[in-house]
Image 1 (cartoon, rainbow, N blue to C red):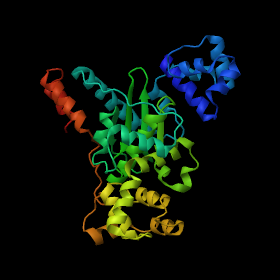
Image 2: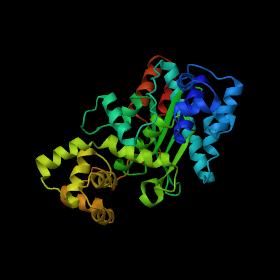
Image 3: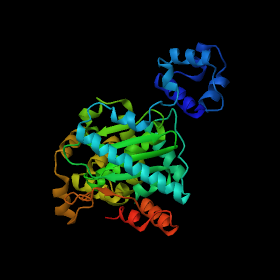
Image 4: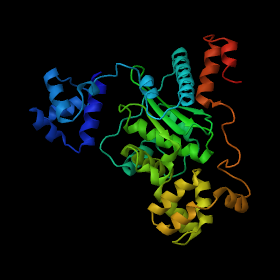
Length: 353
């Protein structure tokens, strides 16, 4: 409880742009005390907690663990129709199954560290360094994120459910999950996974998140909570390194203003969506604002097929024709649980239909 309280105090303070010194002066304590609170090493008295809540413009209940579980909070999100809620309930079932398998096999992974008061670009840089990724592309982001404590469930959602991804953190189990809509192209799924990873690293204690498909459209992104724009910037910079792009352009492409064919070449190298690569190149000023708008209107699948004869992004064949794509780690847990006679053959078979 103290850990959760500290994380929420820190998040609220940073959202308001308040320093620890400012907060300490406001409630009449030392900045050292505020630091210990945020680190989860001290618990405030009720009087102090009431002062904190008032100054940070929050109800005092916000700083305490949810009385209702995170999944019930998720289902109360605005804009969910009956079918969406039904699919999310199935997602919860898979989350529960995953946690049971970890318990049966004794294979729980530690959580990644939380990031505070950092830019999206800096967080991407620090996380790549922490993971020892260098500047090369991430070849299997789904396995990488799972190894770092974010359980990934790739789940096929039909077109009438406009959800790209979901992030949820179960505080009681200390477990984080992300749903990735596998009806999207593989390149888009990679972006969704990295986007949810940002929520995991920074917004873990801020409640569950449902990301709609239109967060990938610049005109709509600005209408959402600032954390969505942050997550998009993080995803692009986490997946695509500036240094490697400079190197490829300098050694191979050899021109400042690159054309659409070069964009496709680079996006295939990094294994991301065309839009993600366009955003990165525009930010690095290899593409002008006018070219960015022009290239967004082009059909990347058609051009990629013409030039490279195949589609790395699975533009024509979606990866999620099966309802759910279990991760390699999940399948490994199933086999281990079966080998140890923790589950039956029949139960194991249900995950591989």
